[in-house]
Image (cartoon, rainbow, N blue to C red; front, side, top):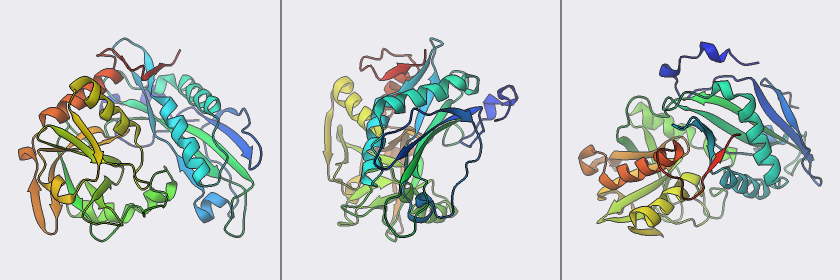
Length: 342
């Protein structure tokens, strides 16, 4: 049933699971449509040991946040983008397309029933995890006959502890995140299990995250383990283009829009070489969890490259401030990105 929200110390909240009151659940037959579903108490679920998600990784997920703003409103950031992406991800893994209205209704219901788990403004957010799993039993590699959609929530603090500081990243030549024409462009659960070992090794060496190279051309970068990558050189913003193996991040899209429409700088979605990253004026990562986080040092081939003197770059800081300002309603939401939880 979740812990008592009154017992939560908001000032020491980390990026960890805290059980809340409830979660949303719906089911769907392979050839049918999603049931209306409803809220159930947060807790364990029962699965056959032959469930498709357990044996063949037939599962996708999303990451979202609900915030308390300075206007004392509760909002969700661009949920329509997550609805679109989970539908695309599901279809790529031969699961029924997620109904947009059901998705948004489930997310809103989960937030509304767990309002008292949302941290005060500036102290964190309510992290939302919509998932779709192949839950029917199957023997043999094929799509299963029934699927389960769940949305659960947890109050979280910052992804990286302490005040924002530039990250220390390691370029890996031993592992690839995704293959060309594979499933790197969808939010499949298997993409993240593959990143666990490289991340553990990097952290054991004192790094915060891993930069993955393009599997077809190792002169090009793709993304970090759980974030998209950006560089700035001579006031030009570049990020790897979406060519089938890179996740189309919601924060990535938001940053590109802010750079074009607000900062009015040159934006290029293109191939980005490792050399360009290591010699950039600024480098930063984007994602729902990390928001916009600067990179201060990159290690590659036993060499270390210092980015912008390990300081937060001007454009990186502007983009981070713009995005957070909109999310907290400290700035006007001219793009209509915020959905109010009424």
